[in-house]
Image (tube, rainbow, N blue to C red; front, side):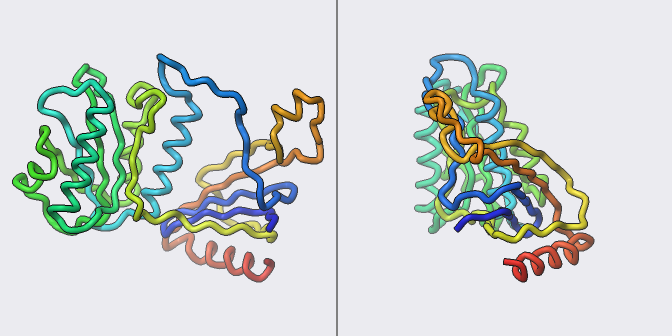
Length: 255
């Protein structure tokens, strides 16, 4: 089904994409056709930004009062990413074996800037009890575990500072996620309702409903496929809730 507005939201935040023209239901933005992996250097800025954005929304959708941040370090520095990855996968298996269930979790790799090798920042969303040292050593026998309770937007803020071009593995996925994480809710609608709120963030850009690079090379660019998108974000709290509720009511009435 085509749409004019796409809305993504959690209990604490809402993002609204509003398009100038209808977006085809099967549209996927194609940003590159031919891509050669770099053998050295750092990740691209746009790759880092996509990772930050994805993790930010996953955190918003899953954070609870029990959320904890763990930092898994190695007693003996591990400079090989694949070896470090094996260790964090072993942590996941140990957790299920010892605790008895699969945790809702995010795992983010970071290369220490002072040469201490790879370590991992883990967000546990649903571990509702204290983690003593005896337990953390069984879960992670490779070194030390630092544990910190984090709350609300601090969870995302705390994690984002570790996701940089210099700290992420090149040509590797710099994070893992458990399969039981909740995704933010998404609505696609032909309604295009405004809201009286002032956004906390706003951005606009143009897009092309098709493969622009291919069409351009074939001299077959279809100018009717160009579109404009404006994205706005709003925080959901006691003050903004009545306005956002009214916004959703208008969406459902117009759709």
